[in-house]
Image 1 (cartoon, rainbow, N blue to C red):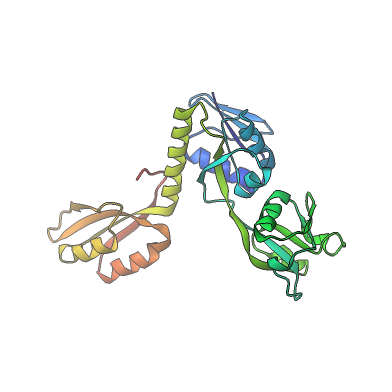
Image 2 (image 1 turned 90 degrees about the horizontal axis):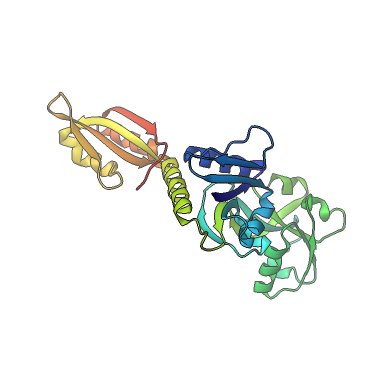
Length: 281
């Protein structure tokens, strides 16, 4: 049975369960189960702490896992990233008291508090900087106020917590993170893993597109198809009115309203956008 580790709590867990469920897998917990078995697909979903997932996968005890890119890197486990999942996005940044004019290249000799010491040490090494890395398990933002550190390195989403602590981001992000699928190498269950990856890719594509349908006059069909070219080409079908045709094409969700405006300008009618559950391009 193919074993896949997924986070046991937090936004990463919710996102992982959602995308796997959308891909047709049974992985939802009804209480605090540590293991959920999908007998139909012969997959065993193992719920672990997000920080531990890369360690288990890297040891070969579990075939693959879903965790954060930052967590996988900081674990120093022998894993490789198979694909990004486009949720759980965050930045990993340095931050220091606002107004002090610090920059990452001026952190030499200072104390840097973080819950991700290996990411920080790797970045400092690349910069040729020697600094003291203070490992904390949480509440990193308050470490400067309490005199534990001079600067911090932490996961940043909105940045509001930093502002409330009187801190500001300094320099560019050390790393941009998101939920990722990781593996050690050959899983020994390649057929099951390949199917999983293809299904997840289908969900990611579907989330980026909608199916747009409309009718337009034949006189403007060429212009309409230029606006909605689809993946290869749009589907054009006859309708009962001789001078009109029905058109269907996949379009990117983020461009949807602009495309509808352009079609309306061509006097297209019956413009309908439908969500796509999954897709293979």
